Image: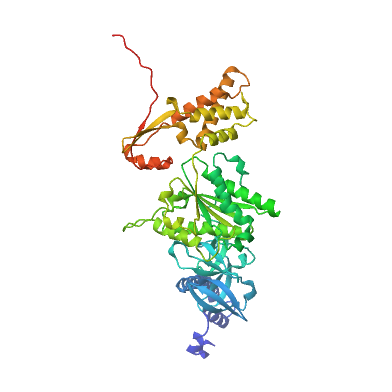
Length: 540
């Protein structure tokens, strides 16, 4: 039969078929049948081995093809376009992509990552990214978009909200995370590096709790309280409402206390007059806190402070921005090629005060020990309208301050008024024991300063605290209840001034005198008056 098959027909047969064909031509008991059966088994084994090797090679070829094929692209889903198209951002560029029919377009959400194939067709949703750049919101637009990116010198950009933030109430100043393409805001991370020194509730400080500053208190009430309490009258006279005021004077005389008292008393006055509750928002900032080594960051902090105040004022709060040590960030700008942060901070502060958005229900309070170092552009009328001097207390003012600290609730050996009057008299007495500094003028005239000339509320508070410490030690030593006596106060006064007997070098005389509220003009020398020591004689 094999003779009847052509060469081409044999080539089309497999090895097993040829062996079966040969075996079929032999007699049933032919000796070659065993050899053919053995040969057939060997061929079957070899073909199975070849099949396995072929499968392995196919897998390797498939893996190699995958390695050589282009990578799939990951983009950000921006919008659904009916019926089967999607707006996708890939590598910063926008594409209108087809969507795989097996993928439901409704399952994709704004801001979600999507996988695109070589033909830029969306084939899979990958969920929301967990990383991305952080930015701060400058403005939440009415249509839900967000304005960002004006800080650190970058151009402003408008981004979309992701589906995760669609119902969130976003405010300026919040820090949000963007997608990798920086087109969609994905997550709110809080306020970030925003300066937050607001007091949830200002401590009740009635004007009666502030002693020795009657003139300053009256000036503040005329400047702030009257415009708020008599708006119609001010409107009738077309009287501009002051935007803020400056508290300047020596350290320790109550500038910060006056600022907090302004917030609390204004709230109380409005409540008593109208019955309407206006909670106060008191933002207490120390000047150096605003300074930052990164370019543009300090300016951003200034913008953010005003934004916080405007935000709270729009919610019905009485917003107070109190900047302590104002000269550190609002100092006089100077010429020269050297860049100074003041050259940008001062204009930024002026711009915020003169901005298009009115500072309604916002009071700006600056406090400084050196008002002469603040830039004149800040202090001009229309910005900081009132400059209120916080002076050192006189003897009567000191007596009132001592009376505030020496309350009847303390274990006093004498009535509070008696002790306050006695220690105030001793504090301001002009006798040699109270002399501590001799001032020499250019004319040759000399003047002597006493402890009362440099008194302050902080020193008075320290004297009372030190007297309490002396009384407590005496009570512990004697195992008695103990009382605070006049001698404790007098001893505390001596110790307090002895410890603070520190004077500047001659080249810093002018600056030191300005800090202590004295005019340094014509002063050529300061000489401390040391307490006399008993002379001892030596026997030779």
